[in-house]
Length: 110
Image (cartoon, rainbow, N blue to C red; front, side, top):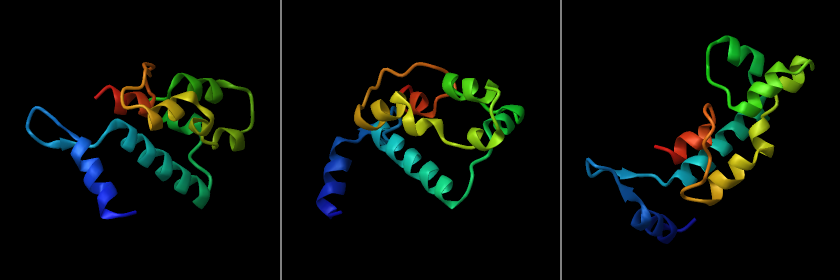
């Protein structure tokens, strides 16, 4: 990527109330997706059953997968890869994502 791309990104980045530049929600979403994909390619993710038992938030779709009577290997997959929230989150700046526990909703509702 060229410096020009970063300069254009900085030009459209908004400031918060304290005058600090905030990264666009779509950029946060793309970074999150890339990090989880890299983590998944390095080995299995933590099972959604374990994540839920640890008291962490799951989105409505992750919660459904965690409750399914399927083997734990399936529950270590990343359901966000096929979720419409990820697609919207990476492509829109104000994506209409509202369900609790979804990291993409958090990025867009900050």
